[in-house]
Length: 122
Image (cartoon, rainbow, N blue to C red):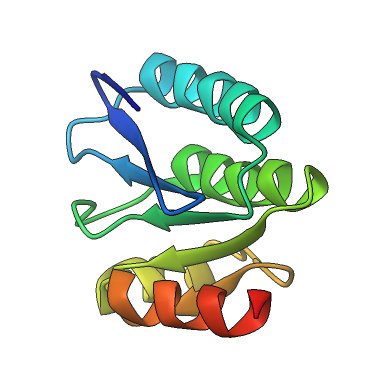
């Protein structure tokens, strides 16, 4: 089952919700994505969430804060959460903006995140 709208998409694969944030995401889109993710994690009892931000070349404080909120929502609903696809420029911008993601795990790719989720669940 998938949920694809402007700004982002959510797909279920092997008990893991894959969340893709699109390059042209607007503030309204990302707020809607936040609501859809919370609903899907709870209703589908997802064991994990992988948030892919590889399409984002830049982030501002709002998008950075919402990425952290997406990860925290999933974690609070008991889904292991990974952030993947972070570009070096995005990482540097998040640091420069003082954004901290202390509870969010990162992985180099979707493949690495899925491997780590499988090893943690078994």
